[in-house]
Length: 161
Image 1 (cartoon, rainbow, N blue to C red):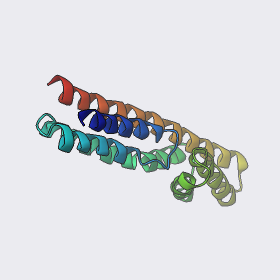
Image 2 (image 1 turned 90 degrees about the vertical axis):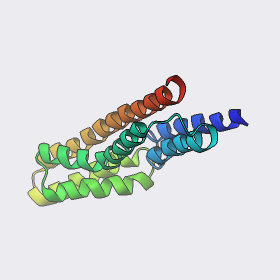
Image 3 (image 1 turned 180 degrees about the vertical axis):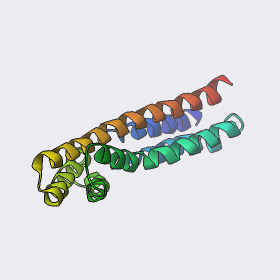
């Protein structure tokens, strides 16, 4: 039975990493499922309280990273507040529209349209839209690093200490 529980933990981690490519997959939830399966089905004594605190903080960071990155990069590349909002709405719509590409292209197109209407300057609108693309890439890299840290900490707590 222990093998089945470990397979569930490993499968949840794999599915969690798939969320980097397919944003409709609830990545953070999948990692938590793996941690909780280990804790309640395999060994409730090895994961430290520090592990749970760190994983919780990292989870909050991951949940807000897409929104924060979009807002920051659109603003940094000359976008307006409306462009920032368009980027955030684009991320949400893009999660469900033609994944995984929707989360890349929907914010780009929405920011381009909103900024072009707002400023009447297509080059400025394009620049703000490129900021939206950079936001997606930076957020994906950040999330990947956080997921690796979460799994590494889990492995250290569960298997080594």
